[in-house]
Image (tube, rainbow, N blue to C red):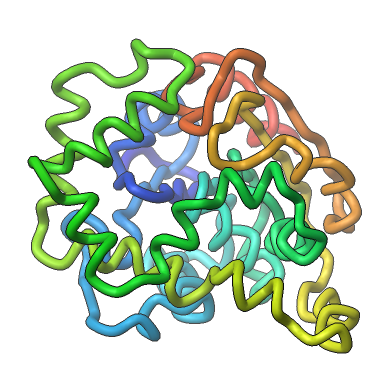
Length: 279
């Protein structure tokens, strides 16, 4: 926690922890009370056992509880990757808790579902790891081998800005991944909430009605998207405004990968401050 004023939550994604917001916390805390928690199961947070402990409804409830724990009824919520998915769902399931919404490189849940249903080859190809994560034990064995060599290579290799992660940054991530139970907990997000094979085999009747599960977001919403995301195709952002009832805008950042707030921190901070400081 840093700063004072209106509450701003910064929610990280896979396979990160609060440290992924290291470039945003000092800037935002000049005007806001900034809280960047370790999401459930990551780093030093609690790590309940079992896949069901990482369902979207529980992750959303975590954020509701966190907002109330700071004596607030609502907050501006900024989420990247899985943190973005939780932020989208919080804005839909508990709109009274979200003042403004900022999403970084995370599609609206329905957009991703529809990409799988329509057999979007580019996205299916990029989602290979999501299929792999549905397995038991094997993902943990592969990702943790040789002191997390695979995860380190993924982090560094998928970044367009190779200067985004120095040796000390990598060391901190490895320390977080090494926390007992943290790796399984982080993979359980996928096991509990995102199985592309099940989505593709969903009966047509259910496919036709699934959109009813996702009410439109009512609060002002900003999407920031690094255009060279190795995991999420830019096509997932096309038409994304139809999921938002409130004011909406999207900012694309060229020559930037998935780790947008770490690869292009100055640009992300500029967009965040402009959006958060508006009346």
